[in-house]
Amino acid sequence: MYIRDIYKSKKLPISYEIFPPKGELRVETLRGMLEALAGTRPDFISVTCSAGGSGNGKNTAVLTGIIEREYGIPAVAHITCVNSTRADVDSAVADIRAQGISNVFALRGDKLPGSGTRDFQYGSQLVRYLRERTDFCIGGGCYPEGHVECDNFDEDIDHLREKQDAGAEFFLSQLFFDNAAFYHFIERARARGVTVPIDAGIMPIMGKSQITRMVFMCGASLPSAVIRILNRYESDPASLLRAGMDYAARQITELAASGTVSGIHIYTMNKPEVARYEMGALRQAGF
View (cartoon, one colour):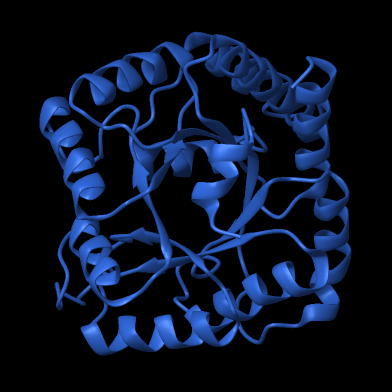
């Protein structure tokens, strides 16, 4: 099933992101996680290119194939491009097609030290390349508070429109902790003519070091409520995880009730208990 059709048939699709393990893909070690995630009935699952930037795209293709064939859940395979040649992208496409996958998520990706730029510099170039050569349903990334490397918010919105014009059919947002920032982003994007579905990407707080790292990488701001959670529970990991999941649940249910989001995309960090908690909050709220 194409992801675009899910948006047509569902009022508020709920999806997860997971990542393949580093090194050799051992399906047996993933079975419990996949079964637990499948039990919460997400509308689709996206699979990143690697854990920790290892760049093993074959694992991505294999894992998406398993999710679709064995669990009956539509899967989206990530493809990144900034460190890749056209031949690299063509190889990734072949691996994804071999698994019978119809949906991809096209991203620039993080630049590897010393790699330089190869055949692609921007995510929109990858979207256009895939649109001209495949029949995939193509998604793209978006940044509610602007891309960390772009100093002008309006320019960043222009880049989003460029991705849509290049062929992106839906967008999954980078993580954020301030819903007001997302509402402002949606308003500006729609005013600029971005009409395709835009999902809110939410990552529950699981640890102080995790949030510090992600905020540095993504440029997301930390509201005072999040800072208080981090300070109060920094020496109590279990309480920090619970408080973080509670904060994410409030974010998600508020976003769902606002009517401004096309869907909710949960960064699970391969933790089924996180997916269960957030999905449970949504179901309890009537979504």
